[in-house]
Length: 218
Image 1: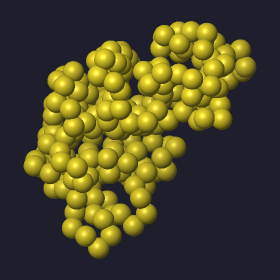
Image 2: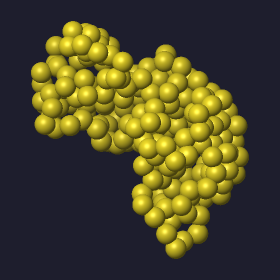
Image 3: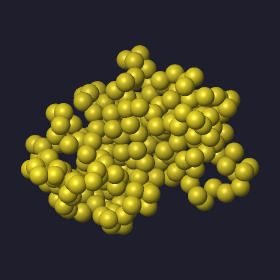
């Protein structure tokens, strides 16, 4: 499977494991949803997979992506994208420069990079907004820009940490559809953390109630 987790458990300093060991596999183009009560470790699970586990936390088990072991690799070598509640755009860069920051290293040359950014802006419905300050974008526009920033890095998997939770209800359905459709179109595995059953339903994949099950295969 493209993204596979085998007996993964995380322990906080001087504390018991956050949840029962998790074993799961997520196929290309599948969006698997992780749900559970606050504090159970959903976001920490994503950070462990991405290589951002806070200092002092201990991880046991194994993580592989397209057959590559990820344990011990720094985050920048894992080829995993992330989206958060707040769109991760740099306030000191224009919208276009934010997207250019995410470009994969294989896209070289000013013209090629500019064209890649323009295509991404157009795909996100942000055509002509490359020079704008991210602060001038609406919440939905920022979410679309943040997704494109992540996808331009050509990740092999993507992790979604409640990326729709701060959107107005009127925007949420449309942005959720936009994000999930783009992930499926690129056939990459995804893990979605959410408290909203509607998000899980839209994702269409298996739902993992973290802390209640030890193994799920998708």
